[in-house]
Image (tube, rainbow, N blue to C red; front, side, top):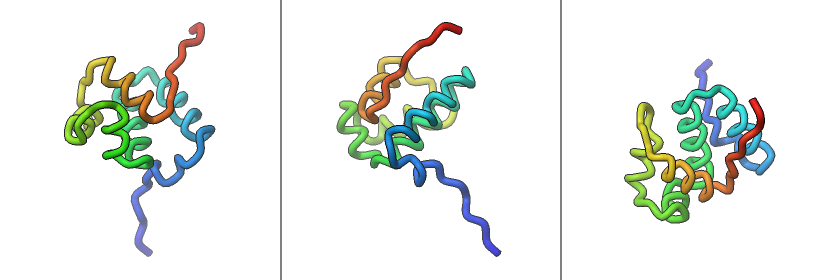
Length: 92
């Protein structure tokens, strides 16, 4: 039996699942996990479309969401907006 690698993008097909996924990643307080989540969402929606909607080049989007990347906050916000995700704050 051959196992297939888990690909979160396959399951991120409705807004509720997307919101729960991003919220869970934000709650870890790990910026790398947030970038991973945004990358999963971008693959689910289509990298070229997300890059266009965010006003970025496709290559720039790949670099911003790569493991270990340290994108500027404005880039993260543009990508989130392009994905239809609103980042919010709650009391700790």
